[in-house]
Length: 296
Image 1: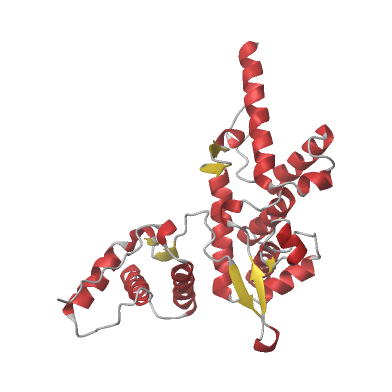
Image 2 (image 1 turned 90 degrees about the vertical axis):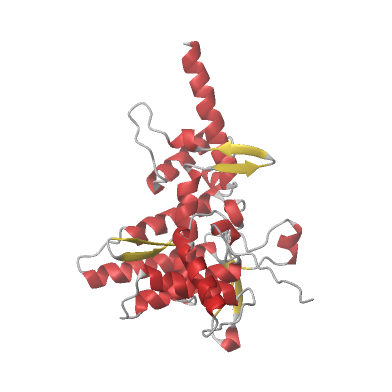
C-alpha cells in the first residue's frame, strides 16, 4: 500500500523557513522591477508555487489536484501579501531573523556576513541607535530632487545593512559567545561598502526585519532569561511627552542620561551594553517612578 505523504504549509511569518523568506524577497524584487502588471492574486499564486516547490512538490500543470493545491494555498497567503490602493506589499511581522547569514561579493572574493540574532538579543544599544538613524534616513530621505532622494535612500539602506551584517567572529570572540564581529564603530564608508555587495532583495529584507523589530520593541513581549518583558510602558505618552516611536534623537538622549548616572559607565560603555539590558533598566526606572507617584 502506497504511503501518504504529508507536507506542512506555513500559516504565519514564524513558520516561514529562511529559504522561504529569501524566495519571497526574490519574488518581491521581480514584481517591483518589471513592467508586468501583477495582481495580488498573481503574486500569491507565484508564492504558493515557490513554497510547494521548496517542500518537494513538483510542478504539475496538467494535474487538477496540483492546481487546486496551489490555488488553495494562494488564497491563504493574505498574511504574507497585501494590497492597498493598487500597491502590492510583502508583509513581514516577526522579530525572528530569517536571514542570519549572507554570502556576498564576486566569486573570487566571496565573504560570509552574519546578521543580528533573532529578537535582537545580541544588538548593543549603540548599534541599535546608529541603525535607527539609517532607518530614518531611508524612510525620510533628504534631497531637492527625486534623483537626489533616491540616491540618499540607497546609501542609507546600504549603510543600515552593512552596519547590521558583519564578518563572522574569530575564534577568540566565539569563545566569548559572539557569532559576528562586535560593532566597532568602523567608518560609514565601510558599512556602505558592505551593503553595496548585497543584492537589492537582501537589502530590503534586512530593512523589513529591522523596521519591524523597532515596532515590536514598543509594542510586543520579549522573553528575557525565561521571563516575559514588555517595554511598551516606556514609550507611552505621559506628562505631555509624545511616544518616541524609536526616535533616534531620543536614543541619543537616553545614552547621555544613563552615562550621567554611571549605571553602565560612560556614554561609550552605554553604547556597548546590550540593547535589551538598557531597555530593562529604563523599564525598571519607569516602574520605580510610578510607585513614587502613587506614594505622593
